[in-house]
Each structure stands twice: as C-alpha cells, then as structure tokens.
Amino acid sequence: MTRQQLFDKIKEKESFLCVGLDTDLEKIPKHLLAAEDPIFEFNKQIIDATYPYAIAYKPNLAFYEALGSRGLASLEKTMEYMPDDVFTIADAKRGDIGNTSNMYAKAFFENMNFDSVTVTPYMGEDSVTPYLNYSRKWVILLAATSNSGSFDFQEVLIENSSEKLYERVIRTSATWSNPNNMMYVVGATRPESLVGVRALVPDHFLLIPGVGAQGGSLSQVCKYGMNRQCGLIVNSSRGIIYAGNGEDFAQKAAKAAQEVQVQMAAELQKHFG
Ligand SMILES: O=C(O)c1cc(=O)[nH]c(=O)n1[C@@H]1O[C@H](COP(=O)(O)O)[C@@H](O)[C@H]1O
Image 1 (cartoon, helix red, strand yellow):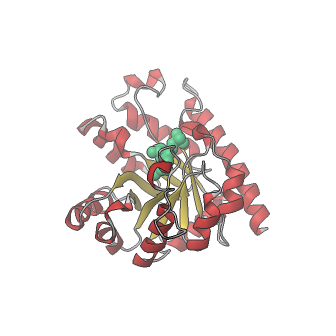
Image 2: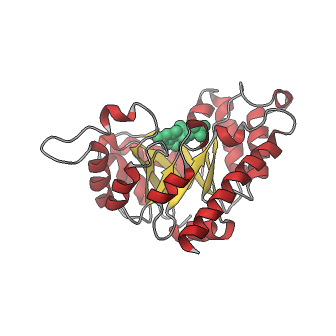
Image 3: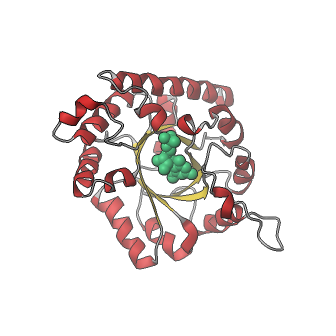
C-alpha cells in the first residue's frame, strides 16, 4: 500500500486505528475451541466486526509462532482472509545481517504478503535496507517503545551530545530512505517524546502502540504526534479483541473499535476541520 493510499483510507474511514491480532488460545472465547482452527475463526470474526472502524491490522508473530506450524497456518489463513484495502503489519521485530534480512523480507513481503514489518534497528543500516527494496512495502523501525525497559537504552544520553539514543536512531535511520517506505514505532505511554520525534521526522508515519490495555492517552498522542496529514497509525490489541469473551465477543470488539474510531474522527475534525 502506498502512502497516498494510507492517507486516503484514513480520510475515508475517519480512522487511523490498527487492530492488533495478539490472538491467544488462553484468552479467546471457550466456544471457539471446538472450531477446526480456533485462532483463525477468532481472527476472522474480529476482522469482520472491526473492519468498518479500522484501517490496519497487526498480527503479532509471537502469538502464532508459539503454536508452531499450526499457528503459522492460522496466520497464513488470516492473511489470505484480510480485505485488500487494509494495511497489514507483521509485528515480528526482526533485525539481522543483510543476507538474513533479505530472507525475512521475502518471508513477510513475498510469502505472506504483508504490507510492512516491524524491525529493530540495533544492527544498523545493512540490517534495514533489504526491506526497502520492495515497492509499496514498508519497514517500521522501533524507536521509543512503550515498555518500562525502554529506559534502559533508548533514553540514555549519547556522550558529548544532548541527544538520546532513540533520537540518534531516528535521525540516522531517516537518512537511509524516506517517508514513503519507512515508519517509526513510538509508544503511546511516552507522549512527551513525540514532540522531539516530530522535530526529527515531521513527515513520517508513526505506529503508536500502547493505548487501551497499556493506558496510553489517544488525545495526548494526537496532540503531540499528529502531523499535517495525520501521520499516525494507533494500535490497540487486547483493549479491542478481548473486549468480550462470550458468544458476543465480536460485537463487543466492534463496539470497542467503534468507540476508538469515534474519538479518532473527533481528533481529525479538530486538527483538519
Ligand atoms: O511494535 C509494536 O507493535 C509494539 C511496540 C511497543 O513499543 N509496544 C508494544 O506494545 N508493541 C506491540 O503492540 C501490541 C500492544 O498490545 P496491547 O497492549 O494489548 O494493546 C503488542 O503486540 C506489542 O507487542
């Protein structure tokens, strides 16, 4: 999907919501366990229910890999089921030497047909460039993450500089490509860091996880993170997909997604009229 197509979808749906498919056999409604493929059945119903309110879906690979070949089969079926006009994110957090990254890019872009993949930039330029050789595909680099451990390294000041490590990561990696195929992850739990991030990358899309279950504030994220074309994709996983766990789980998920979308529409209205 191109950047323009993403802008168009946000406008059309008045939403920049990404639904995270962190699908866990322990958490899905019990009645689905009798299905041939409970994970796929759950995802299918969640996608159907939330599609009017979401522009993106983010399966987190860990939840599928944890189940071995069975989990990967559920992921493949989910990707085949995905509507054509949504942006898909393989939340894989990969990062390796160039020739291995080539294989990851093949796995996610060619084999599974994802639009994008999350990548940890710790190994530097040659670990990231293989993902940039595909047209209409995106690399999403971890910058300022939502977890408490983000302070261990990301917030550390670089010696003889006023820059924090995550700021250096953004500033340097932004020179490897452009806003047409690169995004950054910034946690909603750290809205104050969005000011500095936007000073470095005013035009890039930011993927923002951490609203919902992790307690981040959508209005704070919009206040500090929106650029002149929105420029945000905000993810919620547990807050939407586990809004209910009975027979009506999909309706509950739809309601939770709609509530977020309504807030997003109001933010878009506030910022762009
Ligand atoms: O890359 C991510 O998506 C990610 C980065 C980050 O800094 N924090 C973060 O929570 N995530 C992912 O975003 C999702 C958040 O899920 P919920 O907290 O249930 O909404 C999970 O799949 C996390 O792995």
